[in-house]
Structures are given as C-alpha cells and as structure tokens.
Length: 160
Image (cartoon, rainbow, N blue to C red; front, side, top):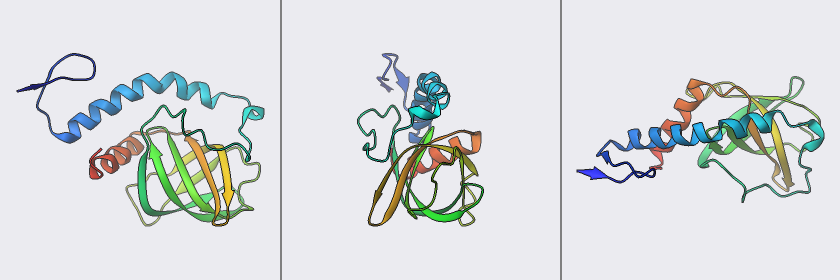
C-alpha cells in the first residue's frame, strides 16, 4: 500500500518514527538558511520585552514539554527554569527569575535529571515577564545530533 507524501511522491507504509524523521529532515533543510540568518542578526535587532512573542511567524513545529526542569546560566548566575516547548532549532524557557539574563548574549542550558537532554548554548530572541517569572524564546546555537535525537524522541512520544 502506498501513501501520498507532501511532495507528491508516493511512499510505502513506514513506521511513525520514520515519517517524523523524514518530515524533520525536510523542515531542517528548508530552515537552515533562515537559522543562519537569524544567528547573524546584529544585537540591536533584538526584540524588546514589550513586544509579544512572534507566535504567528514560526517556521518550525513546536513540541510542548511537560514539566522538564533545567538549569540555565549566563556565566555568572545560575537559575532553575522549565522547558515550555522545543523545536528543531529553538527552545522556550519559562519561570526564570526576573533579574536573570539582563544583557547576556549567550546562555547555557543543562539538566542533571534528564541525561537525554544535551547541554545547549542558546541565544535569546525575545522575553516576556509576568507574575510567575520570565519566559524567553531562544535559538539554539549548537544544534547537534544529540539535540536532533532528543527532539525526535520527544516528538514521537507525543504522536507528532
């Protein structure tokens, strides 16, 4: 039995994880140029805290994560946060303390509780503050094979 694919070429029945991997590979190839463009933007092009998160302009699938605590450091301070959602090239962290991450260019995210989550260097793109703390959206600077594997495993567990 064959199934239509999104590019018009029929494919044989495949396990769900293989389908997810193929979709991720296509999106990854399409977005590589956009990722490099975003990383190379000048610092004065950052979005301010008063600008809402760019939800409508997302180019990657977002995977919501349930209560995954991580540690975040800017090189001086270290804080605990939770992962809100992930994408192949980005991450959203919530419940950061308000004074954390004032002018840091790069942050480091790691987890001692989840060995499958690699150490990530991230570049914040936007932030929003409410009564629970700060939420930031960031681009992952060091996208690695272990990050792709973590993303794929998480997406397949949610049936994406």
